[in-house]
Image 1 (tube, one colour):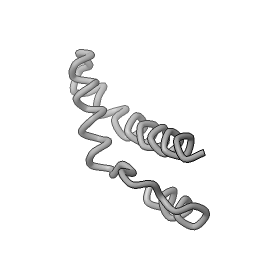
Image 2 (cartoon, one colour):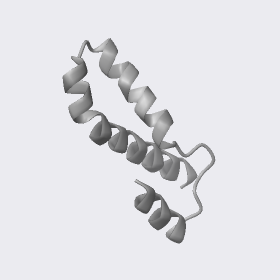
Image 3 (tube, rainbow, N blue to C red):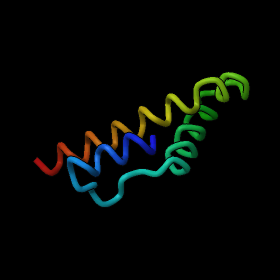
Image 4 (cartoon, rainbow, N blue to C red):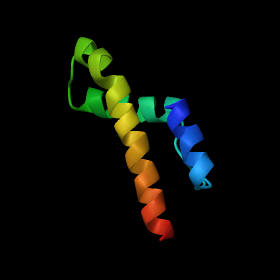
Length: 66
């Protein structure tokens, strides 16, 4: 994720409110708990889901700027 952020900054100034790793992890964890996923399953997928959450936030921000 850090490398992705560095690459993104190299080609485009990040929008205000770009999500951090902790915020995204907390957000997706809350959603997975609400969806009643087991602790084991959450641990298996939280990083991938959080990365997708951050990427979607970046894409949404870029779309709003266009």
